[in-house]
Image (cartoon, rainbow, N blue to C red; front, side):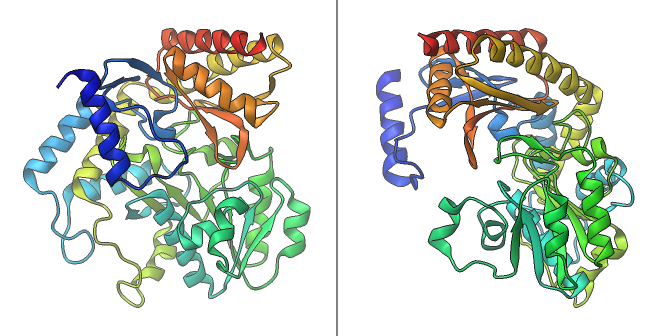
Length: 408
């Protein structure tokens, strides 16, 4: 079978046997990923500027991540993640996360995904406060499970599944006055993304996180920081909350935590997390904290530090944002705004139609991008943390070519 026929056969197999989530059939058959480059079965190479939506922090198939997974898989893949068994690699990872998390956040509950991390964080807040109401924000996205969908703002995703959690209260993002107005003695937690990811890469305004924490504590509630997309070095610090000098009561993690392996988690103080031991196993998971995934995460943390990827995220992010702002000045009829911190950035177009056209044109030119779910005019640019100056320049060059084509 030649390459063209093989690619066609895989597409047909995918379409027939895998749940299709969009109206348009998928067209990229990925065969290999190395560093910041993705390669299709047909041999075409793409500069990856999405990192699997901020997931492959150390790039694709980093040799040290692969080696760590291989070594762990040769020892034990699964015994029981919660119960009587202790994994050395899981304990090591929990310590590494505690040492890099702000303030007194030191006790981690591992999950399989970011959505599960948010579910667990909310359950912990409800259990600890003995309250029901959860405050969330406009344009937020926290997942697609029942509770996380209840705390996400886009009606398109919510409406088919109503009624959702009845005690979820939405308020405008970055608006402390409206938030204060809905607070009462039955609010268990306020959940917020330090930078809204699917909302269009929108940062909290200066002071907002501090105000939220003070407000939550004034009413005996907790502050949950959703760091699933912005954490693990993506903004140039281990966690985005550090930019605001805020220690949340609970912090969720995911996406870049294990360089592509399915792992999430939420971290709190030892005292707060002890709520999950009374009664025993009140919250649990079969596969969460899988040792192979934990090995990938330990290796991820070590690579980020050994290769100074926090500095690289800051430096390359500045170059990226400066270049995109230059394009904004050059194409004001297409580009409305440029935002971001570190390597979590976005170009906001004047219309969703322009965003879709730009993503498709850049793909034709040889790079991958995606728009944000809750703000369709925004194109996310979130490459692996290992991206080089040369690759940033290449990406900006492709952007310019695409905008030139669109401006005709």
